[in-house]
View 1 (cartoon, rainbow, N blue to C red):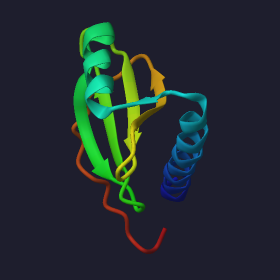
View 2: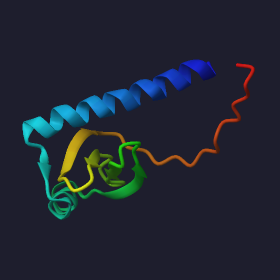
View 3: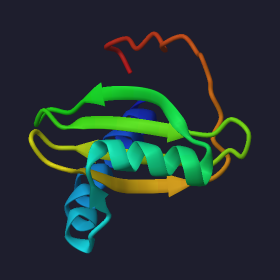
View 4: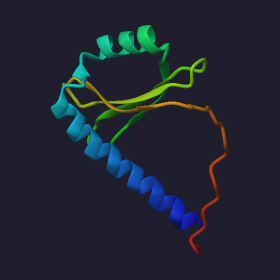
Length: 104
């Protein structure tokens, strides 16, 4: 079960990287300030989390607690901010990290 969870997380990360490349080519990119403003105005979304990718890309998750809509963006160093995924039914969870042991 734990291995399956790990592989699913790894697969999701790979999909995000591939999606970043695809989305950048389709014109879903703009200045970071413009993207944040549009997400707030059109969808009521605000930043819920932020992280740094291995290639120094900034990954952000925006969501609306009222509507449940969510958007994931990636900003590469010196580049525009690109939309890579969006959807519905966002839920905030604050779960403790699982205790993964080396025997699984």
